[in-house]
Length: 458
Image 1: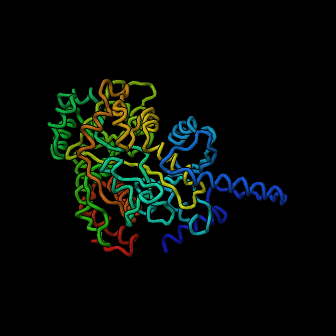
Image 2 (image 1 turned 60 degrees about the vertical axis):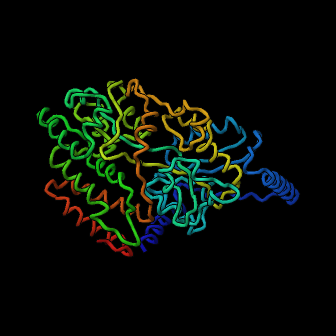
Image 3 (image 1 turned 180 degrees about the horizontal axis):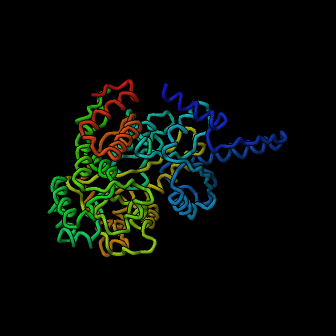
């Protein structure tokens, strides 16, 4: 009922159809021209069917692919690189907020609207979206994609409950900790990543050092920026599924992260900045916080973008987090069942996510392909540097130090709702500094049970 209400609201607000879509005009051709067009289409379709999915398409191939997504920079960079190989291929892109994508897909499926040829799915709601009956199973004929082609820790994030591979990750999203080298040297005695890792192998050790930093700086410097970041990062350090056999054990699944959040708050380990706000962005270039969670994509989207004056060039470092690293975010792309040119869609998907040339395109954006083969064909693709991190090779550090300790949980269809509830509880912890972790757990139980009536929450 909750889904139906949500869908009806979307339909009402969009005038009965999907947001951002316009009605297509139908032009009736004379009978002779209709026959000519039909013959051309039939001829093209026949030619396409004769091209094996294992072969490359002819460079002169003509076609159009539609796509819905939320990262215009990624879309433009990757499609333009593809068009250098296939100049007669065009793309039609519709920008959609990632949080709005599930209801947009759902509405299209219910009212019979058009879906894109290439569909995106963000990690937070993927457990729900991959259950929609809209995806081509990429492990089956004619695609024959194998999970062994990409890094193991991503495998649970690319399949639905039936075991079908619904999408391939656009890029790796491993996350460790970025830290200000100058502040680490001043307050912790070293800016060497391996020494810092030995100094703080556990979050308990991290907290104790954080108390020392706060005291030494007379309350001016925090170890951490945001309570939401520490909650999300520590939550993703576990491989425990959030829903198991229709049940959620709140204490087992979320108790550890909520306890750490309250300790970071109460013992002055973290500031209470809200992620992605102007104040948070400004703080990234100031001198009052040492550590922050940092995925591959965070380097450009937060560290670099928050410092347009380039004040902190060479001042940042990257290290592994206490008690293991985490997967942070991620977007997959799949082919929809309604795609009109699945052969072309597969050629694009292979280029963007599996090919060496696609990997070079990602590297130009500071991103890293999920596929293994490109790194074997061109080992330099493992390397990536940022002037903000000096001479440290971020790509190699992510590959050799951070990825090996990542655990991955199985996604569930309830994840999107759970994320919303966790965000609500985090806001409560930020607003009410007297709210304990036990009380936060109880509030979470109440919210989850209210939103997920078919799930047992305890």
